[in-house]
Length: 388
Image (tube, rainbow, N blue to C red):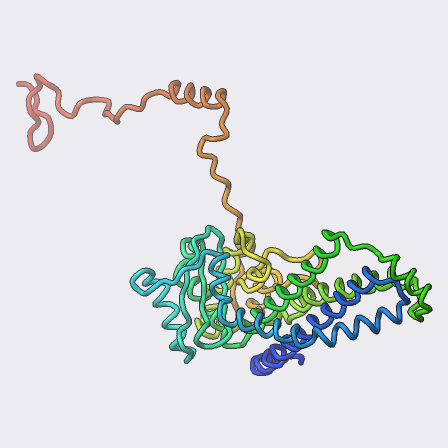
């Protein structure tokens, strides 16, 4: 599903969305089987082969319930994911009357792109960032932080809105929401299983071993520890795959969204300046990783480039310079933290007060001689009059 252009990227995103949903069911089934194997390994003393067969039988019984639970989870996410995101970020709907500047910019871009205008939201946060959410045309929305509104001029803000609108057009938003749902489901089930294991009083049942030896049962023994280890390994693999799915999504979506913004605004310099202003200032406090992955810039990159959800600002600006002819001013210095006198010591305050007192008082400018000397005859039209 490699994408080599805009339209192949949109088509690939549609296929990725279906694959992600299928991957969600696979990972849930894997967790259910692992939980069944873990339960049998902790409560039965038998051979590994017998425990595997018993866990598979338990899985077949739990299969319809796991499927129904996953479908219910998807339905809840489909209907209420925006409310959950707004609760985390503090986003609120705004109208043209409340934010005329922002509303008019987005409306003009939507008309030029030929798309229905998404809902507009503002989050009261000092961070410089924005993101788009939604699964269909009726749900799409763009959220902008108040910090971004204050820091960017109209051209730069228009470029950011065009970037998010391109994400909606390309299908990136739907794919990222689905990936976030998968991560949430798997993390929930994995944590639930681990809590059941480590916070419970389960232990290996030796009574089953005695009963099996006395009754001549052919279950054998010695497979409990191996079953537990295999189950824990499967749970860890499911959790890792859920995380890897989010990071493995093509990062070319950010390059294409930047290019789409330039196509809409015809102003590559505005997109570059917006990225430079956002660089290092986009951390939204309290936002989950799934939300940050949908933002214009995600400063929570992994330790290695493979696990970074966004290309670096440096690479994105270089791509715009190379392909769109923009001008990159380079990284912008972060503003110095405000002191407001809170950290000043008493000695520093007294020194500054002494310096103010020692400063000579400035006097208004006065000429060396007054323009008219008292007692002298008034000057004539050709100069001062002489005494006769």
